[in-house]
Image 1 (cartoon, rainbow, N blue to C red):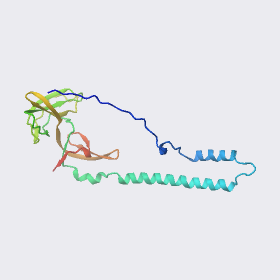
Image 2 (cartoon, rainbow, N blue to C red; image 1 turned 90 degrees about the vertical axis):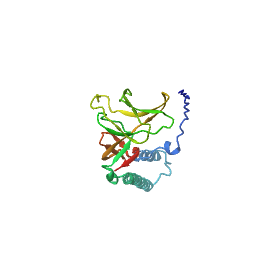
Image 3 (cartoon, rainbow, N blue to C red; image 1 turned 120 degrees about the vertical axis):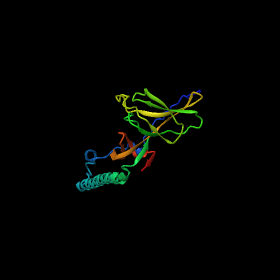
Image 4 (cartoon, helix red, strand yellow; image 1 turned 30 degrees about the vertical axis):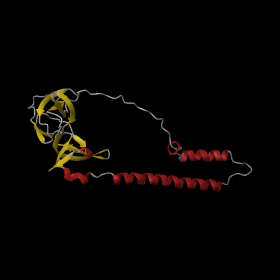
Length: 216
């Protein structure tokens, strides 16, 4: 198999700041500076009445309170719109199909490959944390669920977790590599940074959106 690569060209475009990005933020300290400058440069023959300053200060205070109130309301809205983990409690105990790695390859674990019609044979390959190949086994070129037999404790777990993938061959030539999916019951539903995460019994943790499938 001959593979070719096309150089990627990266074109950077200078960012243009919008007016909302460059506009200064007016806070109480800036308001006092503006008020001081106004007093310093006012016409001494026609000074501004003190009631006008009081009115300006009251108006600014009202606007500042509204801005703070809107910020608090936005925070409340974000919390209310965030997904509640209680909505996903029914998933606990179900078996999830994910592309999560193996944390204990010594035990039997169901897995699934994609079916590659152009391949004559398929092999399941396991690599450690550094990408080093640990074990390779001939498997079915099928999208049916198969069983990883386990290594019976023969593999040291120092460099785990382990990623597994399928490699597909035609006349002995590698024609495709694709990740393999594994199956594990869901043990826990957690909220991580405002997102819902799923902890599996095999030790892996994945985002809810990364689930490929579910089974009872």
